[in-house]
Structure formats: C-alpha cells, structure tokens
Length: 403
Ligand SMILES: [Zn+2]
Ligand SMILES: [Zn+2]
Image 1 (cartoon, rainbow, N blue to C red):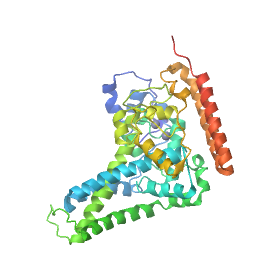
Image 2 (tube, rainbow, N blue to C red):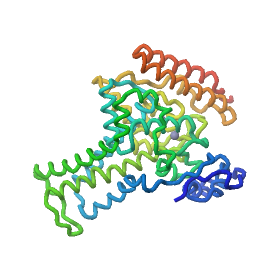
Image 3 (tube, rainbow, N blue to C red):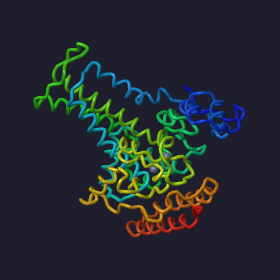
Image 4 (cartoon, helix red, strand yellow):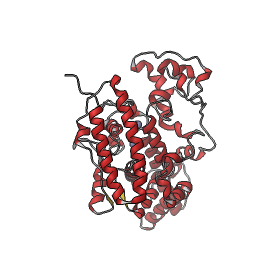
C-alpha cells in the first residue's frame, strides 16, 4: 500500500468543490490512491509535505499480528465470560487512553503525584498503543498542525483510512517526537516505560492467560472446541481468555480510539469556528467515553472535560472527578464561561487572527508547563492564571457575531 506522495511528482490541481458523497471514496482512499486523486478531491497535492510516506510492514508486524490473532477465536471458542471480559477491558482501557494518555500526558489538564503518574503510564501501556511519550508527542503535534499539511492524520487531507489506522505505521511516525514532550522527558521512569513498552504488552498478555487459568482453577469451564482442537482444561481456559480479553478487546480498543482521528474530523456538528475540521459527535462520545466532543476539545484543550455541558456524555471526566474526591488526582481544570460563550462566533475569514493567538497561546502554555514542572506548585498556579488570561485575550480577539 502506498502512502502520501511527493507533491513535486504531480501537477497541482485547483481545489474542486463537489458533493460530500461524491468525494467520499476519495476521502477514504486518498492516501492509498494516486496523488492525482488527492489533488482532485482536495487540491492539496502541492502541500503533501514533499515526502513519500508508506507503511513499514515489517516494523509494524506486531500491530498486524494483533489483528490476525483475533482469528484464534475460531479454535479457542466463545464463552460469555470471555466476551464480558473483552468488553470490560475495552471500557477500562478506553478510560486509560482518554483520561491518562490524552487528558493527562498530552494536555496536563489535571495534576497527579509522581507515583500515580507512573501508574497511569503503565495503565496506558496496557492499551498497546505505544508509550506515553510517543502518544503525547504525536497528539500535541496534531493540535499544532490540525488539518494542515504537517498533520499526520487529517482525514480531509490524507483520507479516512489513512488517518484511521495507517498514519502511525510510517518511518516518519515511528520515533517519539521528543521536542514536543520535553516536560515529560524529565521523568526517567516515563522515558524507560516509553522505550521498553513491549515489556508491559507481554506482561499484560501473560496476565490475561493467567486469569483464564485462575478462573478454571476456581471451577470455570470454557466452551467447547469448534475446530475439534483438543486442549487441556487450563490451556483451553488460558488461551480463550487471552484471545478475547487481550487480542480481540485490544483490537476493538484500537479502532474505537482511532475514530477520533478519522471520523470526528468528518462527521458531526461544529459548535466553535476552529481552524480545523473537528466536530462534536455524541455517538463517538459513547464509543470513546467522552472524546467525541472533539470540536469542543480543539477549541479549548486545557479543560479536563470535553463535554462542556451536563448533557454532553463524558464518563472520562466523571471518573477523573471521582478520582479527585479520593485524592488520586487534583486540580482538575474546568471550562471558563468566556470559552463557552464563544460558541457559534466567527466566520472562516476571521479565523486567521484567532488561529495566530491560539498558536501563541499553545506555545506559551507549553513553556509555562515546563516551568511549572521545574518550580513546582507555585508555578503551576501561574500557568492557570496565564491560561485564563489568554482565554480572555481570545475572547477579545474573536470576532463578534453579526447582528
Ligand atoms: Zn487533544
Ligand atoms: Zn483532532
């Protein structure tokens, strides 16, 4: 499968405005198709980054193996207990991704002690979506370049399928983008976990196998062997839980998470006139425990909650709130009223100055975050004040609605 091709290899074509459904095939397969398809559907061939990006099949073999291993269910069979575990591990680990990898490591929307931070990294690693530094760095990169030529997973530029599950398989995307996570690199335990991610994957897989054996020891009998495979009781129980609770659950988790990079930039409504294509989608919020309010999030990334109102389903926020009550996390950052009031304001033409302020704000917030880590609690309070002031600046700069 080929990826995004150099702009210089094709003649730039002007943007063509066509209907959504007509351009849908191009949106889905743009990166797998010829650059001319991209040029016709999006008019961005010249902005394709000047580099040829393709899937590293060998280096990503473990990722593709995870999918193939789901077929193991044919031999180990089905049981309601195994399916319930698969679903349970999906929900719990979706929270690890949204609450820890996204809202903590990527955006620092709340605070935690160092041991809890380390535990959050280990929990996030059980999702088998690479290390916390890799994940946070690429996500911060996405926010800086959303739906512009540098964005690695813009479905409007590179196609739905590419943005869903291939963008991270290229040589360009495999390393951790260190310059985006200097604040996290100050913690050697996080750097270690980021480097030796495989250790947690293997440990979690073994734990799933062991859980099956333990269940069998306690009297649980897995269902029969559909393919006539004769296994001992413990082997059968261990392998069935391994296939369902680890492989199938993790692959479900992959594609649930990926919808935010792909579908949430295509389907849904736009409350805020951001300079990207992010959208709010209630269905994706159910699948991803609150991440579907992606337009809210792109508009104001500093908030721990992505559903800005009580009726916007955001169980990740509810769980973090509950964790704050018992002292596991603290200083959850909310949504300023000034931010909520910006809904519906602005037009595309007026987006530029807002984007400039937002980028400045993003850089300032990054610098302040680093300072906060160095000098501790006092500096963290300064960061909050700066963020609030910047929000007020955005409020002033944002264009007023036409009356
Ligand atoms: Zn984000
Ligand atoms: Zn996005």
